[in-house]
Image (cartoon, rainbow, N blue to C red; front, side, top):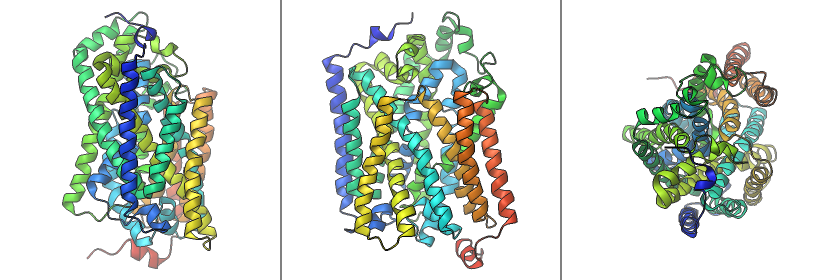
Length: 523
């Protein structure tokens, strides 16, 4: 099978355009409907219920929403582009370790997040952290830190959605993305946390099915991994390198370290483990969850495994290889989308219009669900964790209307950035944000649920160091190419850990009354 050029394939017909429009319209309509229905469950004018609901959402909805928040544009589109670009070695970063992170997120964070937030009367994750350490200052710093990292992540979601829309229709993504963010704004405003959770749950279940279907079918269509490897090996110039599990000939600095050395490859399980547990848009899925019995807990774990495990391992990893087998390196020449076109191009090549339509819907589900989860948090960070925290006299009604405006603002800014200057390679750009979030909040959130000795100063210095080094390290990795991305991850995580434990050991913990409330003695 000789490689074909992108232009040989991308000749959008009325059938592909109409099918994609109808599919995305159905997805968005159901999301709005869920937002409308959820509005009935919120006491009118209650800012608290708007942010966290009534803490009674079941494990099935929570599990689907958690999977949706994790299976972002990175997982569903950008990771395929990584494997398409570098071959088998890209699978380390593109999803083979993803399951390692998300299931432990349920083990370590699900019950504790729900328990701590309920005991402390907290409606947001920064508020839970702030009250855990009895520090309004820490709550605000955490909120602003999240705002910075989540904004970066939002850009990636919209690039993924814009890329698949261009690939399907050949049309500029402007109006499709505008409509999509308007729909996301609408169901967040209508249903608040509950509406967002239900919409994300629907989107998560749908994209899990599509991801598994595309991943399995692509391998079958290609004839299995032996056939894939044989075809990749025959590609001119770089063929033998594409089937290596590690590519030492690539630079040892910059993003390529993740594929070129053991330092980078061994950093990937650390990255996925910390990021899935530390992602605020993941952990926040548990704030409105009801109390779980043993059966409910295993229901949560099973749903997360089925939705987020199979699509990640298959869709992200193998699909990039099959796309490279079909298109050679031709997609790299298509600007600005480049390798991030690999997944939608593959869907059309192996399944025609029907599978392309399902993939388009799944990609929009992945991008919009993660985007909605993050934007809702960003809005709450300003309203609840800054304004309401320091000026409690502000009315709930004013906070609700400000929240509606901030949701629109935080949707529009990344939308504009995506159109004007999209990141060159989605997975790398979002990976840097993921490293920062994971390294910081693995300690500040998850470890703080289990260690009584943690202090506000240990948490504060962890946040400041993690944010500062993420900015500096990102500059050294992407712009200067003087630091490897794997080395960056090790310095980031180890530095956060040392500061968190060392400074906590030297400073005073919260009051005994609070610790007794959060860590009751076992009978």
